Length: 326
Image (cartoon, rainbow, N blue to C red; front, top):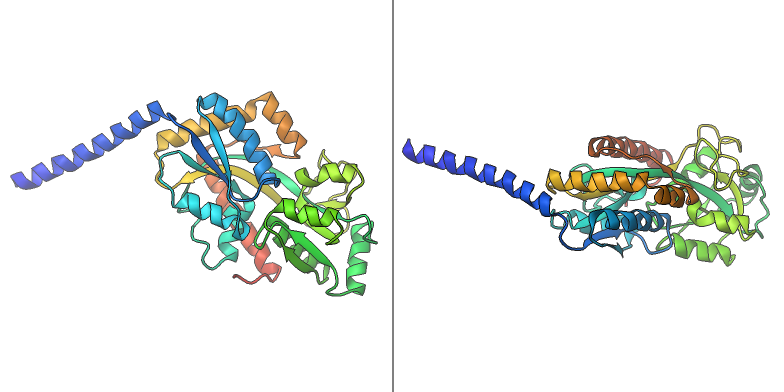
């Protein structure tokens, strides 16, 4: 009996020490640089949003947040790396609809579970994609695009940031909803896809509005529609897909921050506090508004609930679009 009591005391002491260690760790956190993994090459919307938030959070936390662009497999390479990282608050992921809602449904072995392998820190905001075409493409409206694609089945290509990204599934969703056949051309990020679109090598793309608005305004691309239910301030003259004649079409992309599962709650709370303060900054508000992002700050629990709902929504869209898991 004495042995059992001694063992029980040791277990209770260990739990007590664990709690004390977590509290002590939070008090000194952060005491070195933090790495924010953006699971795409530079130039894409996730990278843009991630860097804006990281810069302000660095100031608030008193430690540098170093952005590490680690692309591959529709963002799942970087997401998997973070999921396997030490849960100490020094490796974070710029979460995004493609990696947290689409990738786990599209890839049979993505290497992580968005609900079990991450601790949500908080939401950042949401932004629509944009349907843009090269000026040489004959369609000037969504209706004209649909008519052209029906007259030329299998001959219209669209580019995206990669298999399983929001741009890919949105394109398949659009094709399914309008009864047309489009050929998907995957790239290793939004930047390379837009480079080929601007060069006239592909005719169209579903890309984040933050990356296309400048080119549309300059006349280098033609904006046909945005994928949200409301128009976006970046391109106020470009109709929504619903206005353009595609009923109930809604395919916005959303961003947030997550950490590896097991990251101490006091560290998560510290990061959430810094994130919410960053999003309340007038400078950050203006920068994200210029990128077409509607800010939606949240608690960790609210973001966890959003990830769950977003994953269910996009998995259904992927299935409805006929995209088979890889």
